[in-house]
Image (cartoon, rainbow, N blue to C red):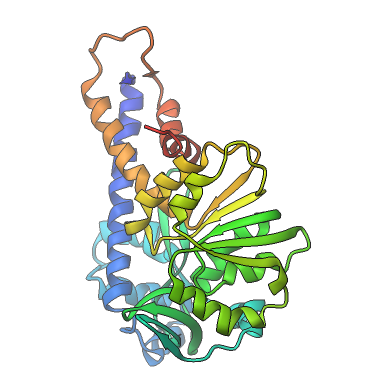
Length: 355
């Protein structure tokens, strides 16, 4: 690949590079806050600003977060711009009623239970606790806005933990990031990853879904699910759990098979461990025609991939101007062509390549 941009497009590329750097800074800053200071803001602190300045709760919360992160938005123009571009647009007060009414949460009763190194229990967000509630939102100029939410009251949710680490929980982020895949599920569905069975519960409730086959490799999780959760599912007859490794099962699928209409993958904890597995699974499933696919938190995984691809293309743009071009070599000559390479569709194409 050769990248040859004119002077105007080179300037646009530098602006995009600044945006990518700011994206990373915003993600790191807010991830650090949510990990280390998630309960720093208390209801009384929030109400003092809301009442004293007649301010919307989300904006007041964002200002408290900015202050906690050492930003001086009233004295520093760069801090103010960063606040306007990212922090203010990231924070949202959520309504607990929007999630408490979820069909799964209304139906399933959760016992506190331990099986091996797995534990099923209820967790909760404290009033005003900060948490990630959805995938980042990408703007037209490639800004990526983290989505950080809070409730003004306590919110409890079921979770399954492995060795004390939360592996899966039916909480706002899970509900919202699962929604597109639940909507797309149809026919005979294959799901890699069981968790608490949220996807299976919601998908099996659709008239357009005939069956849901779940592939899960951990026998303890399967035992927990079959004994305590599946009997409560209204459409349990549609669901079958197979004990197997997801990648081995995917590799065994025949390219000629028409067994499944929709395949959903949810076997990673987050983007840190998920990108490599996402790339591997996309390549394994690329052999199957006439089937639709869904990958949990795919936008976030593509975002992580985008940083790598952008860095490679940016370096190439700096060094390939005077190189000789071979007849079969891809040449990028416009900024728009450059953007196509790092768009979600361009990244999906890269992710599906076998090499």
